[in-house]
Image (cartoon, rainbow, N blue to C red; front, side):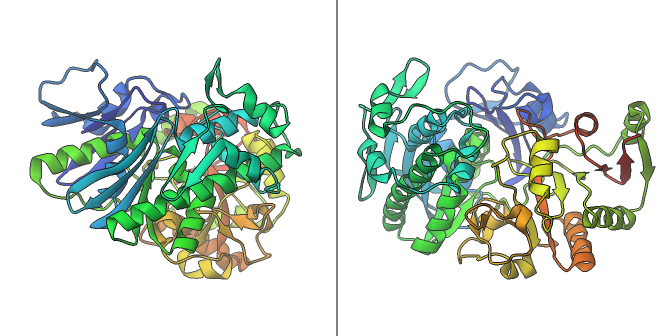
Length: 505
């Protein structure tokens, strides 16, 4: 079992015979966003009441958990690299780790991972991204997605200034210490404010100039740096396969550029940030003990299943509910979406990672442009400029989006931003005519696939707006009580709780 703690998101993973059986971030079980505490609940969940032979830990922190068996410890950067390489279907690949504390290039082949080069805090691309996030008035880590959304409203007119702050050279980069580092509780220095001739932003609720332009410029410079590192990773690995890990591996705009401009085959495991390091430590222990590679991780539904006690929870809630067959639930949900209702969707084991992939989702009709404001303001209660992701049937995806070669796996896990080529889905089309789609096969999630197929048959558009089932500042719901509480706090029209159809009284 892999355990990660002492990082922004603690987690635990169970690996058996090279296969990931269970995985969960601590935040999903405690309901505390980015919970860094020791993952007691996550450990107990993945153990499932069993005694395990081997435990692997990330970092050197003391262990406050009774373990009597073999304990392996691995560095954070190596653990993150292993989390994506050993989860990937590639036997050989270049590896990039892009995180707050470290930026590293590795090469992987078979059961071996070798470090090629690295940059340590405070000279990391993760610090650059966190400083920009903070300068724009958002919380580092949690607010990085907001910066990407804000960038779609801006023009990259601060690129030259930012290139002075982040020097990029073939195969590497350097942050200028005149502009970046820890100064009080900030990651940017006063010189950075002078460089941009702009004061730090307040908490942005709309895409104001010049802050949207700074976001667009930072995105462009980050992509330039990442492409430079990727070229070196490809060259040193001798492979067109590239795997990414670290919190900035979820930058969907940059991932599109990597696939389109470099022609690489990309893989990024679903929980790519520091919270996913537990997966890498588990893989490293497996390889060390057996000399064998693990099996590819292509199924992100590794969380807990809550099929017991649903009726009792609903009876206590005071809500109106009805138990239906699987087919009836799918048909009723598709009908509700087609007439403009917003539905909470809770079915099966929750996802590993920060993306809602069809187990814990809020769903709406992408054809109706007003859905963007309805879900942002009435349901999610977040900034109105934030974009929404679509889920589309894989075989129809090319009708709605431009999909680059080599992006099969990031598109499966909703990790790539691509151009929209259809005018039929305005609610999931961002200001810059892009979207971050999930390309869905029936094998990946049969219930979710059949729902979208039914919606497509009713409307002609096999796409739904799919955002995470949570409120601003809270993690994605995991258990039925969290789902019911969120439903009662919002203006959701209906809730699907396994085979229960639920409506407000």
